[in-house]
Image 1 (cartoon, rainbow, N blue to C red):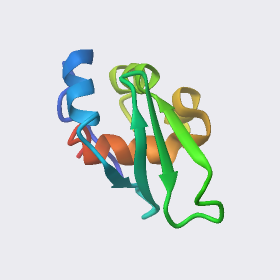
Image 2 (tube, one colour):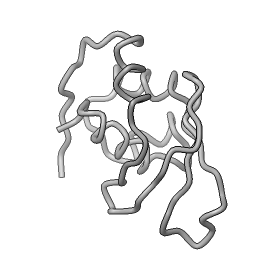
Image 3 (cartoon, helix red, strand yellow):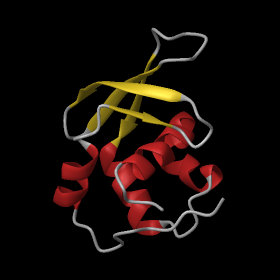
Image 4 (cartoon, rainbow, N blue to C red):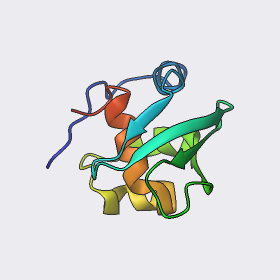
Length: 101
């Protein structure tokens, strides 16, 4: 599936407002995540249906914003340089925030 930006001119402040309101989301593969902490720089979360549900994941929101501004095709491989092992959850977070359709 191809994803498109819904707000390509969004500011970092507005980006943070959208993503920091989210408390849970799913990746495009259907994996479920719940947010444990957000400090406007990092989003920390747990994968609810993983083999290690106690393992905390994190996404650097500055890097995710950089990816949102730079990338045109939001494949997980294109997100990987910005979100290393959390590239699928990163795309799910953007979808949940309404920034990708």
